[in-house]
Amino acid sequence: MVKKTSFYLLLFICFFTNIFGQAKKQNSNIVNATTFGVKPDYKNGIGTDNTKFLQDAIDFCSKNNLTLLLPKGKILLNSYGITSADKAHVNILQLKSNLTIKGNKSELVIGSFFHDKHFIVFSGFNSIDSSKFDTLQNIKIKNITIDFNSQNSYMVSGYKLRRGIELGHTKNVTISNCKFYNGDISCCIGSGFHSKNFSSNIEISNNIFLDLTQSSQNIDHTSVYINSLNSKVHHNKFINSSIQGKLVACATEFHNSDNQFYKNTINGYTRMMFLASTKIENKEISNLIIRDNFAELTNAGIYLWVEENCKIKTILIKKNTFISEHVSGYGMIHNGTQGILADARNDVNAKIEDMTITENKTIIKKTVIGGRAVQFATEYTFKDTNNTCEGCNDGLFYKK
Image (cartoon, rainbow, N blue to C red; front, side, top):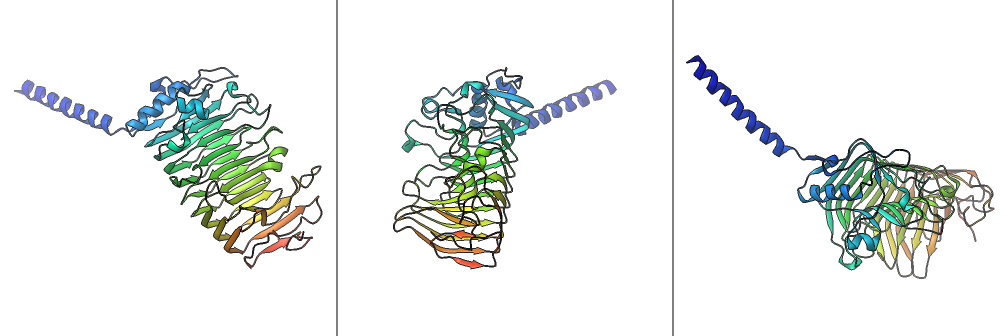
């Protein structure tokens, strides 16, 4: 009897252990990229090219709504993707819907194959014809590092479109706690495409953008470019130590409505941001909030770019600190108007309506071009309250 009881007890335990194990397996939603052959073996310029393996992992996790966990270490990417869309848009990896990519001290390294070439590391450009891009949704990228490897991959023959994450038409995206560094790239994160407002709800937070502008051929850099509705860029650090970055780099651009930029720190860029209304994208944008940022820059903090018959309305610029310092040895093209605000473009019938600028602090430390040490350089009217300026030796408003 004892033996029978022990036998049934053992059978009972085995049965429930098996059920528990199956349930645990079914409930697990994390897949390690090493399962698909990804090897974090990059060292001293040598390593496995993981482009195909990582794309296989992305495709599988998207299809099955799973989290893709990148392994600890340096993961080399040293070739383009193989689809027709990849070839058309110089994609390395193609993003998919319902995808979470998570790092574990994981670092993607862009290989020397991309020296002086165009590329997009993670791309939402998924059709040869841009008018047929599929709209993606529900993407999370967190805790990863991308080393753009500027020692072995930079612009030489001219300006190149070299980008980190290009979302395209995408809804519901978070990119958080990532580090993007050591690059010579044109843009680190971009969203939206032209005037088709399929992209929305993009949140970029708690990331570090470090030294992304290196060569003299890199004449136009924006770290974050938002052409999406209802998006937020907050609690990020934008840091640049190169002279070229101080001459040409912009931290963020807003080209769409209902967007917020707050509690970011910017150091070593030429300007903090553009607010842009354009004919090819959106002729009217509205409801933009820029608040509680700290920026050490070469020129003015915020530039307005409004093309002919375009409009920006309802702008709040509040409680920001702007510290401006020109770069010695360069002329007016690079050392522009300092202070809070400047017009970058102001075409015929361009309009700014309902702009409030309040409680901002400006400190101008050095001006090498006469007449540029001013708080505002704009022809638009706006509500100006409780703003202070130290070092505005050429007045509060720029006069032509």
